[in-house]
Image (cartoon, rainbow, N blue to C red; front, side):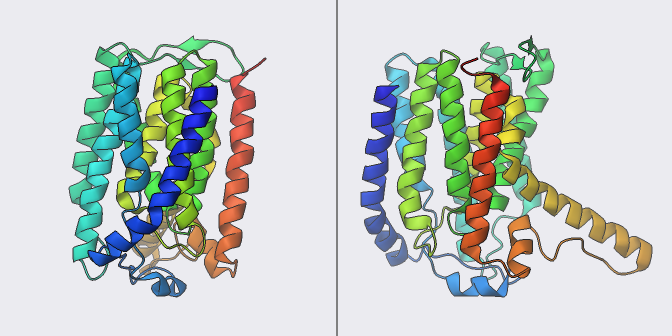
Length: 326
């Protein structure tokens, strides 16, 4: 535990120190965010902010993972592979967005087949390798072996949370701060579950995220980009699967779940009312959910901090449901 915490601090300091140089390099190479025209008008002023900053914590996570594997921590290979694979997809998405004047990027109909293909391959690999941990039932103290059902369910979690983090990353520091909190929870769960290598890797990623947040909190000088969002979301899902605590992920990650469902509800209701009444109607002023609160007049910093608080409280609840230390 001591080594893992010291590693997290060291990675945080290094990433924070390198952030300024990374921002200058990204801007010098024209890697600045294009703001979508269909977003809140207040966000237009963020155009040109350096993006793809997720590389600052994805890179150290891959390096730490490779070292841990060399030291015999085989299980760390799965979050390493997941982070690399979804990070590459996110990097391609970011690159497409940089070329698109509207900032739309890689269209969902082209991106989803790749996400599902990689998600299913990783889930199948975990199952065949015997690393698919039985799912622990909160408060019950029993575990359930999903058998082959693990593969499609795990793929849903991987793809779902990769996109959930993407939806959440719409305000300065929101996705990074909430992600660091939930990662911290899974670091503790890995340690309690007798998986020190996994705990060390997770806390190293937390350190990288904290260093990144030094430059990403309001007013952000650096955005995470899809390379960070997709890698972080898929990594969270992988940790939940390997620790057997997947049922706690929607609890601790309630903010991510709410962001996704706000979009699904809005789109479904709009299509339904357009068929029924001839015009589409909305439940929220704008989705994902954080934009709804923006249009209600909440300051950006207040929304971010309150979503962080909700995530922290939900993670404490998840820890209690896990029965760690009981």
